[in-house]
Image (cartoon, rainbow, N blue to C red; front, side, top):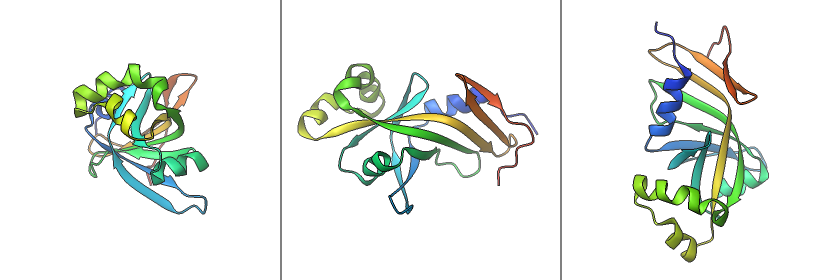
Length: 151
């Protein structure tokens, strides 16, 4: 089997049209939702209304999992999320959201209470035709974990 390269995995994450996130409520009950995300400065950025379940869950527990929709070439990202007020990042992220999803973030921000969810990965796991792999983010660098079994 071919060895999975972290650069290929990061490229797949950046190019994905959509992904899923899984959060938990205060009782530990899971909630999954498909989202659009853009990657900026090593993190995924999700634009959302502030009253959604996933935003409420992140406020209670910042740990989440982000994954791509494919089930045969799996990419799972364990991450820590933070809620960032829309105005703080609108200038940096609005052009990318507009070109990628035809979203007018400034207009949305005026009509609704919105925020960004910054998803900072710390572990990435993959499995599929390229083999199994796991990386941990250590001091800004992705380091491969040896002898990794995905299940």
